[in-house]
Image (cartoon, rainbow, N blue to C red; front, side, top):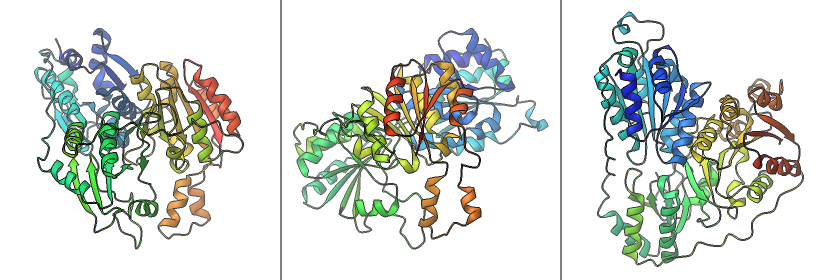
Length: 512
């Protein structure tokens, strides 16, 4: 058995049964092993940042890691932005990167680079195998590390001779690593804060935004009068009817400070103290009151559900029915607006859909207008590196096994990873992409004002995507995806409804 065969068999033993790949010469024996061993679903991406983004989306929905296959250090470099986003989303990924053969590396061939140092910037675990006999052991360790709460990127670097050489050994499945222990005083301290009558926020992030934790947090809030909010930096939120109608900390720093100003106490549940995305002249970095008291109930690497259950027990908080969000919104009509788009999506989305949001400047109305939508999962851009929406939607569709995925996608960031459409067509994935076409990097126009700069002609050209216009219908069809344009919300509704009845992907260009 060669090292590549031991790699594939070990990954399957660990429950890693999906591989998102863009291979090269150094990885050909791994590719051959994938062909010769049954059980691994292989999904091709046309660029490495698509591959890593797909693995991120898959992990968020599947609740387990897939593996990637990247070509040497430059391939890893191409995929780095969406590995950064995956790290912020706390996604579990086994990241497999080929490398020069051990005896070839000293010759400094053109693709040689310091792959390990690059991997450390986004990975919680990095290991380079040195011989075929170690590959199975190292793969098992990487899969185990990827699953550690709350999930992380684990990168395994494989010199090509470790894959083609004989002597591979299949490793048995390793047990899940335990969560970090809870602070024994955190529950008591949080309970004491919730009883003192001061204005208190419970800020949920990570696993705290999934349904089991939401239900416990809602019991605490109902029993104590505390306010629940979702951290802005979050990868996945359980939303819609039957879930807590959580507001999200706003992106705009001034709006975030206004939303958090009243809270004297903040209890953090798998969340960090809120800070602005960027520094702005004369403005503070933190978004909460400087004198506010902060208490961590549970970090992301601790068991959030256990911590919240302990808090419920400490407070004696009784069961509480989920609030009624009111009637389901109706389809909006006329000229597109952010709120009208959100209402239309809420009115039409199927039950248990996945809403993948990289709407950027057009996303502000999404939360308020979709509380009464059917139950769904919302996936966000967690790391701020634009270009994750399309690949995350693609990976989520692979994991969703038939669940409809709706990707609300800004036009500028879509161009970073447009190759995702080709994979959607190839795999016949049920993804409805709505391109929000304003022909500009609209978010940056707002940032110009925030930093006190005044854009002139040259600057405006740097933010303009309309010279020439991007031909979205032709771009989609060139990738094998059917597409149509909508000028109004009426037309959008008709096209969305028709797309939900298709087996494969469909793209709608919405002119905003």
